[in-house]
Length: 326
Ligand code: SF4
Image (cartoon, rainbow, N blue to C red):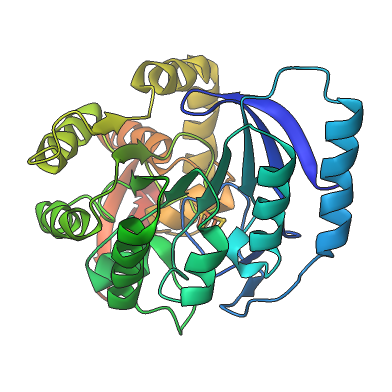
């Protein structure tokens, strides 16, 4: 199957048969936490990126032959990019609804909901799960790196319009990234946006898988609980935390002490050649975990082997042996 995958089990949807509407990676955003990688086609242009007919044929094959061989609770329209960019999405939803009694869900970044045609296309779905990670322009740009024509006010307006028109359920997902979109001001702005949108559920998430940009770090459990408490004001019982902090902690522990020791020495060797900012160390050594890199850098600082310097308003780390030579 080219466009259908799974079913995969998801805590929120059950056994979900995914339908992938776009080739990677066409999106209206280039989120720093994206697991798919850098957006190669950053666009708001809607078109039939892959033939709708081919997708419908695959759906019919699965329904006729039951080839997946496992139970399906829900059909989920998604993409390694933004699925509402595909102009056939309304036809695909209608096709599924005509041939199955299973619910149809759509995972989307919600940036195109200001377009009445997109809202009409999604009207036949049962559950729409849009995301909104920031309601302040500065944070929106930092976390989502939007295409130039994406306007944050318009995005929030579109989400609110859709949520009020839609007969199914809107579950709004908010992904918080440490020191990027998790400040008190960010949470207050999100709280106001949530009030306008009035979703059936608010689902909080953080970076749990390797992101495309090493700056994307998970928020702490305490921060997540603070955000949940703020957003629950007036929405009691509708806010849920999706992330499993225990699993994240276990994974980090699983990386093992040996790996840490090796990384400490690699950082020391790298800084012996030239001073570097933290993010560059993380990138150059392919760690993709700024928190782990910072931890290892701290080991070297505490041992007096490297030190932090500021040059042209930028923080660098340099090897102590190097700075003594200069
Ligand atoms: S909206 Fe989704 S697919 Fe697009 S960049 Fe963000 S996380 Fe990746």
